[in-house]
Image 1 (tube, helix red, strand yellow):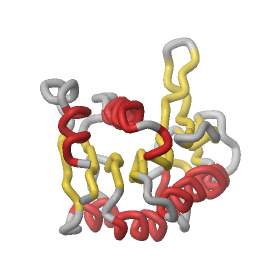
Image 2 (cartoon, helix red, strand yellow):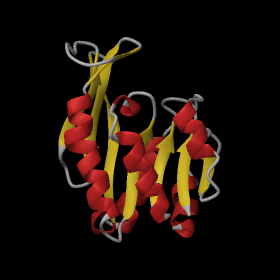
Image 3 (cartoon, helix red, strand yellow):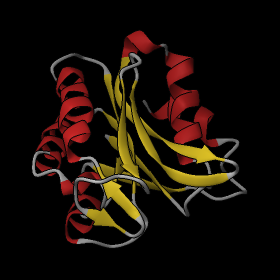
Image 4 (cartoon, helix red, strand yellow):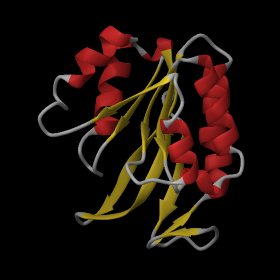
Length: 167
């Protein structure tokens, strides 16, 4: 069963996934998560970091090449060079596949949605799904092999333990 966390931005979805990975060990999880890039207290973009430490830029306010999502310019090249190979490696192993996150920025890569589908077909995904609706996000939500968990301030501290019992 695939487990996808959803909720408001900044609620703690990525932190929950990182806590689960810390508990099971990096040898039993592979994939990527996204982290905020901040300068002087202001969010200026997002990075992609694989579980094994490869880092790329997902999007940045000062980006010059790539499609735009809001004020950010998305680095499709880094999605294709960092996130996609991380998902492929995870899919071709017996690890829990970490996909943080399935959202409009990542979907600017033509290779992202097809790889997410392949990963979901394994039934081993732990990831996050953008709260906003979109064609692909709705497709993922409607899959019978996906369990959606809404992260709130009230449940976020207990979710890592609950997720560990599910995987």
